[in-house]
Structures are given as C-alpha cells and as structure tokens.
Length: 167
Image 1 (cartoon, rainbow, N blue to C red):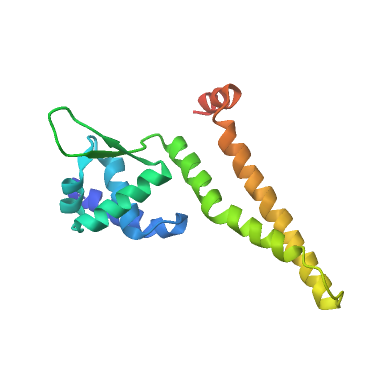
Image 2 (cartoon, rainbow, N blue to C red):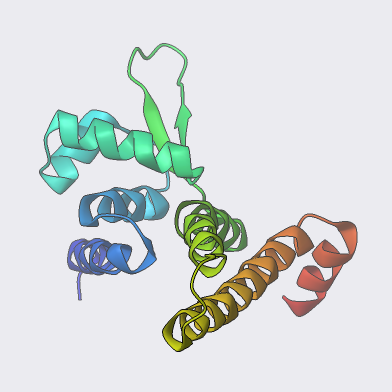
C-alpha cells in the first residue's frame, strides 16, 4: 500500500470511529489528519486534503480545540493560523475520557438522581422504578468515579512513575 492510500485509509477509518467516542465523522477526520501530520496545518491545507468547506473546517476545528485535543499555532511571518493535534496518546485518551464524562455521564447522573428520588404513591411499580434507577445511578457514579481516578492518576508523580515503568 502506498503512503497516500494508507494515510487516506487511516483518516477515513478514524472518521468512522469518531462517532463511537462522541464526535462527528468530519471532526474525527480532521483530528486524524492533524495527528499524522508532522507539521501544523492551515485551515486551507485541511480543507484541501479533506475536501470540506471553510465553515465545516472552522466549526470542527473549534470543537476539537474545545475538547482540548487540537491546538492553534502561529508561525512567524505567516498571517494564517495553523493547527496541530495532541500527539501524546496517553494524554489524548485522558482528555477524551474527561470530555465524554462531562458531556455524557454527568448529565445522565443528574437525570438518574432526579428520577430515582421521586416521591408519591408507593405502588409496586413505583418502588421497582426507584430501586432500578437508584441501582443504575450507583453503577454509573462508580464508573464515572473510576474514570476520574484513572485520569487523575496520570497527573500525580506516582502515577507518572508507574506509567513510565509500564512503558
């Protein structure tokens, strides 16, 4: 397989996988392109490579920067803005986990807490509903706490030492 074909296959596959971790296809394709580019790319470079509009590129670059996985860079003597992706895969995984927790898990926890604390008639159906939604709340809370612990682990010196030993 030639380089160009391999690069395109990677970008297309990463784009398809993007929906699995909470982003749209184009956003994932831009991320993939920036991740495998040795130098920062301008918006025009991204538009040309992926055959997308300026508006689409701009909107998705902004979203990737909001996620903290793409950064804006400036080159002296250039008026254009350039973009680069987080290259450290451990850091990338941590940022994606934190962002998904913030966007998906925390709102679900709020809903589960609300619906599991209903008051009213104590029918069999109501008791079962409260019991099941309370169990689900506890489970999701444990999962979210585990994500928090794993992402915090990388930020302390013991965690960094363990990660260094594991590599």
